[in-house]
Length: 218
Image 1 (tube, helix red, strand yellow):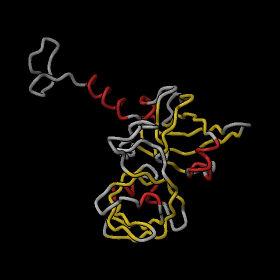
Image 2 (cartoon, helix red, strand yellow):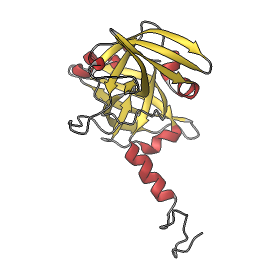
Image 3 (cartoon, helix red, strand yellow):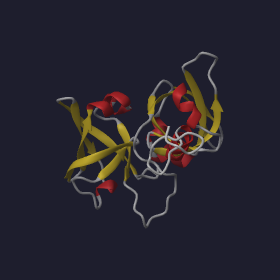
Image 4 (cartoon, one colour):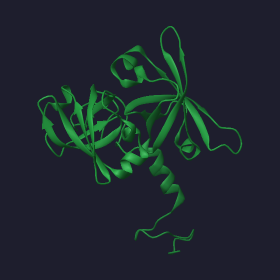
């Protein structure tokens, strides 16, 4: 479990292809403190397991499904990535509960700079729109952000969009500050919304089986 508060930006040093997987080597410093093989580190919002801890970074294996479903598969040497160690139970949660399980990818459609902040509009698949709410939370490349507006797509469209406001600190300390229109980002919606949806879809009895309205097994 993570909080979406990025600890540092790492740099991808290499991506080595394996059989239906890849091993990434990332240069880092701060997240190495206390990290051991087997620990979890979120890389651009993707929960990865540390394989080796190196003097100047770490390696992690990425399975094929993760490569296919996230932007990690397109990462190359020199790319900057957001890093966060797993949250501790005795620490403050500065962002929101983030699992590191990416729900889909979005595309940056527009970036508008203002005097005090930057507004970013991000397109996403329609299937994820139902989990968004104005002033709700979403993780973008592992960064905990507050949704400003939810923008429905045209009738029949397979995409919608939402906007977020980025303060200078976020732009300076995360990779979102270097993102451009057309870039692909990892998205994780609020896990609470997913559980609420599931509970509303399938009423369950004490035995864990779907029930009818009268409480008898369906």
